[in-house]
Picture 1 (cartoon, rainbow, N blue to C red):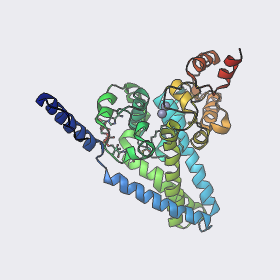
Picture 2 (spheres, rainbow, N blue to C red):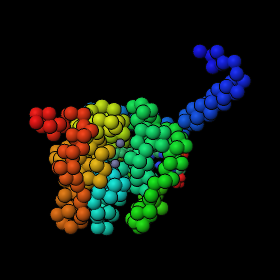
Picture 3 (cartoon, protein in one colour):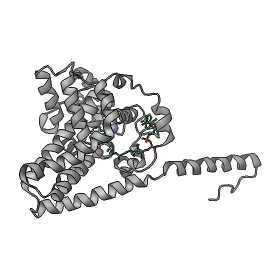
Length: 330
Ligand code: ST9
Ligand code: ZN
Ligand code: ZN
C-alpha cells in the first residue's frame, strides 16, 4: 500500500517520510558488504572442495589427513577451552603455561584474536538476538552462520558493545601480546605451519598439504564453530529456558567439542562444562580442562548445583528435560 494512502494530515505525512528515510538509511547501513571477506570466503570454499577431492581420490597422503584432524582438534581446544570458557566467561582459572598453550592453539584457529573474539562473544551473551548481537540469529541462518563476517556491523554492536567490560583481558599479558603480534603470528600458525609439517615430515606435495591441512581443515573448523551461532540458535530443545532462542543440539555439540548445549550455556554461562553433564564423548573440551585441573594447571572450576538446575527446568523449561517429567509425575 502506498505510504500516504488515507493520510490527510501534513504532519503525519512528514513523520512517515522521515521514518522511511531512517528505515532506508538503516537498511543501507546494515548491508555494507565487505568484498574482501566475501572473496576470501569464496576462495576458502573452492580450495576446500579441491582439498576434499584430493582426500577422497587418495591423491594426498593419509598421514596428511590425520595430521589435519589432529591440528583441527588442537585449534578447537584453543577456541572452546581457551577463548570461550576461560577468557570470555571466566568459568575457571588457568596458570600461565596453560594460558600460553591455549593462546597458541587459539591463534592456530584464526577466529580473530582472543580480545576481539571475547568482545564479540560477551556482546552476544549480553544482547542475544537483538541488533546489538554481532551474529543476531533473528536475521536468519545465513547471517548468523557466515553472513555477519561479510558485512559491516550494526551500529548497536558498537554502541551497546562499548558497555561490555574487557578490563580483565587487558590485564592478561598473554592476551595482549597475542593481540599485538596477531597479524604476523596468526598466518604462520594457522596456514604456513600446517602446510609445512606434512611436507617436511613425510614428503607430502606442498600444494596437497596446502589444500588439505590448511584450507580444508580451517574451513571445516569454521563451519563447526559457526553452527553454534546458527543451528544452535534455531533447531533443538530448550530444556532449561523455552523463552530464549538458544537450543541444545547434540549434532552441534559433537562437531563443536561440547559447545552445542547452547540452551544450557545461555542460562548458566559460567559453567566450565558449557553443559549440564559434560560427558566427554560430546564434550572433549571438558576432558581437557578436567585433565589440566588434575595437574593443577586449571583451578576454581565453576559449575551449577543440581538443585539450581532443577528449579530452573521446572520454572522455564520446554518439558524435554527428565526433571520436567519427574515434576509431571508427582
Ligand atoms: C570467526 C569468528 O569465524 C567466529 C566466532 C564464533 C563464535 C562462536 C561462539 C560459540 C561458542 C563456542 C565456540 C565453539 C568453537 C568450536 C570449534 C570447533 C572446531 N563490542 O569488527 P570491526 C568496535 S572469524 C564493542 O572491524 P566493522 C571497535 O571499536 C573468521 N565494540 O567492525 C572496533 O575497533 P577495534 C576469520 C565493537 O568495520 C570497531 O568497532 N575472520 C565490537 O563493522 C570496528 O570493528 C574474519 O573473517 C563489539 N562487539 O567490520 C574477519 N565490535 O577492534 C572478520 C566492533 O579497533 N572480521 N567494535 O577496537 C571483519 O572483517 C570485520 O570485523 C567485519 C565487521 C567486516 C565483520
Ligand atoms: Zn549463543
Ligand atoms: Zn558463551
